[in-house]
Every structure is written in structure tokens, then in C-alpha cells.
Image 1 (tube, helix red, strand yellow):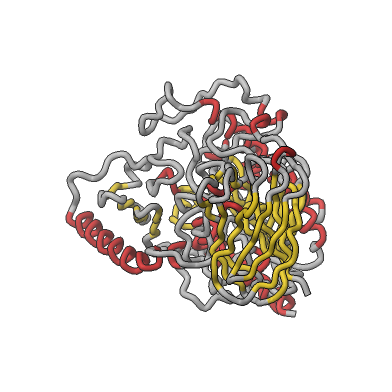
Image 2 (cartoon, one colour):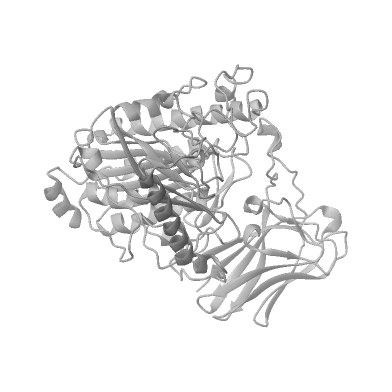
Length: 585
């Protein structure tokens, strides 16, 4: 097998395992190793002490672009990722991922957590090189306790607090593959809101004084939302506890010495809180919005307790990890990232070349070099003298003027290259592209469109359901492309009070229709608020019930998959969380 040859090449009993842990919405400053005394993160700190910290590591301003860049080594604008929901989070199907690279080298591959780069095959994690997937594919989830999740495309019920549950499944994967090389990706979904965390973590912060606070952009000491800060700190300590459990599992299985472990986050902090005075937060392409903690440990190969000042980014991780493992990259597309292996193993030349790292979001572009940041307003900041990015250089030297001019031209070239790719997203939602090997397609409300009286349950689409279906003018559509003609079993996850049971509903596509009736009541309450630590902006959820509508013969075509009602005896038709289509033989 290929990994035997790799083992000989790297001089070990086997190629290194890889564990990548990704936090969600955690800022650079949300760790005690980076100087925050509001909380304690001993396990992440220990990971840093036993490995190397990249002091200036950059990700994207929001979640899905960072995930796409980590997975491919390419800027997110190259591959169709332009939003965080309703299909704009998807990487184009012709992209090859880091999981494809490691799988081709004989590795077992697993992902456990928030995917956020597409829900249907060929966008689903099982279609992107991961043998095993457990978690949710959306951008955020409505409840973190016993939530609805999926396992390899099949809906299942989570157990306990979601981060603990994801860590449990990741550790089970590690144990199951302890005798072969594995690549384990653990994209946690906290401290992204909703603000939920077990009491044993929150109790410490319930009334705790917050001594280190934000002092930026109008969010000074008197205005920082301390209830948000307390919830975030508790969630980060829970993440730290789970990092400790994962590292302990590697020790228990005697795998630690031959496992590369990485920890980083996907964007800047999701609220104004202490971040070492850096300008910007989540959603911003300023320093505080895109700088992430990053530490990597590989005993005996990567220096312990080292700090590397050179800039690096999420786009570098695919080439770096492939380089460390000694395996070929399977993607034939040009990478934007570069291997930073020489920096990690102590082989970097003294004149390590400078570079430009681009940050793009919401039509704003900034550029980071080793010493400077050129911001979205075409101002140049000296990040060595002004690490918080507060005062643009007023009296530039000739060299600085030349650099600013060149970076401005680079931004123009960047926009010209990628703007056409972001101009119009005409990609449909795919049905049946996995064939009989991956027969299930989930079409959540997030990916559909309401019409007439029908409304979303919340203005953030990711974890919504359709409601207020109060007359026959209402309908729900999905812009769908059926990949293989054939029979599909249709299941609707719905809710309907007893007084409104009896509506006749119709699903249609390309002139083919399937009709059924809402024949059983299911009227669950909204929940999620009971676990919140402050009032959330995201919507609440319900436990929706599966209702089999029947089997429909779908042609291979693109059309609107339309759900409508032809009769409504009560005050509403039903509420709809998702549509499940399963290819049958």
C-alpha cells in the first residue's frame, strides 16, 4: 500500500496520523495562552507548549470560506463560496479536498462537526473524501442539547451536549483506526451562538467579573455585552475540555508521538470582547476579524514551545500537511497556499520570502504582508509598529508608497479575477447524484424558497423551518437538479396541530406529481430558549416528525421541486423543516 512506502520515506513505523480541531467564532484572544486572564484553557495551552505557535495566522472573516480554504488550499472565491447559507456556502464539485489527498494515500478519513460547505451529494462531506461523517452540514444549529444530526447522510439523534458528542464520535473513529493512518477533522460549532453550554462550565462565569474587555469601535468597557462574553468564555472552556479528552485518547492509544495535532479557529470573535486591541471582529477583513490562534504539535518533529513570526494562513494547511506526511496532493488545480513545513521543522532559510495573503468578504478586500496590512479603504498600516491596526501611515517613505501602489494593483487584479465567479450563482440543489451508494438527499428549508403566505421561522436561514402556511396561495420550492432518473421515496419532516389535520398536499417536478394528505397531528413546542444564556438572534427549533408522502418517479432534469396544498380544511397546512428524497431500487 502507498502508506507503507510513505512510512519508509519519513523513517517511521508508519506515516503520521492527523487530527485537525477547528473552533467556530473563537477569536485569537479567547485563550489563556494568548494572554486572556478571563478564562483558563490549559489543554489548548499545553498543546501549544508541546508544539509550535504560528503568531500571525490568518483565516477568513466568516465560517464557510475558512472551511473551504482549509479543505482545498485555495481562496474561497475561486470555488463558488460567496455566502454562509442558501447554497452560497458550497464548494464547486470539481474541487479536490485535503481528505481526497489523504484518502488517496491510504488514510482512513473522518469529519465530525459543522461542515458548512454543502449538504447534498456531490457537496456532502462523504462526497469530498471523508469515509465517515457525523454532525450537521448547515452554518449554525438551533439547539446544542440532544440535537437532530446526521450520520453519513442519515438523520440521527445527537446525545447530550453537541461538542461533547462530536468529540466522542471523533475519539471512537480514532480508536477504530488506531492500527492504520487516519485523518480526523473535528470542526466544532462553538462558541458560535446560540449561547448554550452545560451548567458546569457556565457556573464559573455566571457572576464572574470580566476584567479584560474590548475597547474598540464603540464597544468600550461600559458597552461590551458581558452576558455574551461570559457565555463565550464558558463555551471556550468546554472546547478546551474536549481538546484535552481527544489528546488524552491519543495518549491512551499510544498514538501521540506519531500524530500531528492542529488547533485553530475560523474567524475573529463573534462579539466585542478582549482581543488584544486588534481592530475588527467576525465579518471584518481587518486584523481582528481574520487573525486566528494556531498551534501544531508533532513530538520529535515540530519544535516544542516555539513561536514562528512569519505570516501563514488556512490556505497553507493542505500543502503543509501533505508535505509533513510525505504524500502527493491529488488536486490538479493551482493552490494559493504554500507549505510552511520548513518553518515548523526548523529548516526555513533566514531569508524566508515575504508574501501577500488576501482576505475577501462582502466585497471588501484587504492584504497582509509580513509587516503591513493594506486595508479595504486603500490605507497602509505598519503592523510591526501598530499591531492593533489603528493608525494608517500618514507620511509614507518612497518604499512604502511603492508598496501601497503595488498592493492596490494586486487588489484590482484580485477583484478582476474573481468578481465574475461571484457575480451570479446559478447552481441548483442536487438530488440523487450519489446513486444507490448514497441514496439519501436532504433538502432543508434553508435551501428552499417560500412563496405566497409561507414564511421562514427566522431571518437567518441556516436552521429555519417554513411556517405561516395559511392559505392555498402558499407554496415551497427548491431549485433542483435530479442527477439520475428513477423512483424516489419522499418523506417530509413536518408539524401540524390536531385542529388543522387533513390538508391535501402535492409535490411536483417536471410535470410529475405525488399527492398525499396530512393525516396525523404533530404539534411540538418550540425549544432552545431554555438552554440559552441570553436572548438569541437566531430562531428556535422544534422536533419535526417524518411523514412518508409516497414514491415519485423523477426524470433526470432541472426544475422547481414544488410543494403546495390543494385542500386546507383548517387554519394552516403544516410547518416544514425539510424534504428527504431517497433513491429506491
